[in-house]
Amino acid sequence: MDKQMLNNLARLIDVSCVKTDVTTAQIDAMVLAAKKHQFICAFAMPCYTEYLVSRLLSEEAVQVGGVVGFPSGADTTAMKAAQAKELLSFGCKELDMVINVGALKSGDDRTVYHDIRTVVETARGVPVKSILEVAYLTDSEIERACEIAVTAGVSFIKTGTGWAGKPTTTGTVSLIKKAVGDKVKIKAAGGIRDLSTLIQLHDAGCDRFGIGVSAAIEIMEAAKLVCSQ
Image (tube, rainbow, N blue to C red):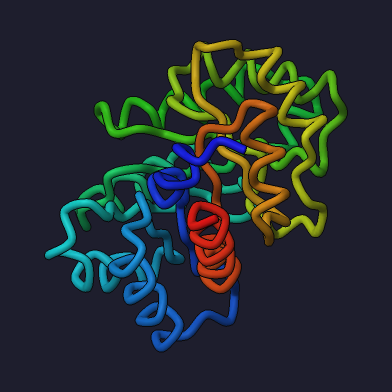
């Protein structure tokens, strides 16, 4: 087990509160966890993002990310661009954008590319993570989506939103890694609730992990225990 990785684990974790029923109290709890563990990035739904930024202004090490077209990816490109612009105005340092899944499955690669590229251009150098929502895709669709997203200029391929009800698997991460190589990084999200799963995904090629607050805290405690042995 790579104890050096575990000692720096918080810098690989994007902690999130991105469910429909999230409350401000839960956002506050995420802020406390982010400050304590120094997670690399924190995400909330768009209506809470400005509030989240205000709560983390003093934490230079903890960035705030924004979600674009979340969770369906079915917003128009213009709506995604406008949302990205607003989130950046709040102070977001990363954007996680859901691709147009329906267009991909329809074989409309041009629309998928234009959708992603427009947000990348709007971001003006701020890293964009392209959320594929792999639970709805075949292996060949995942490979195609990776190629489109890399060509469009994303910084990360992200597996999913966590809303699809299927966990990210090592097989899917290996497939993405084979498709993108070292051109972009990979973020896994969905079903990462223990340290063992995280380590397996890391070994398969993941560079970042999107995890809910309670699971992230438990994983950090487990990593601390391993490192102390």
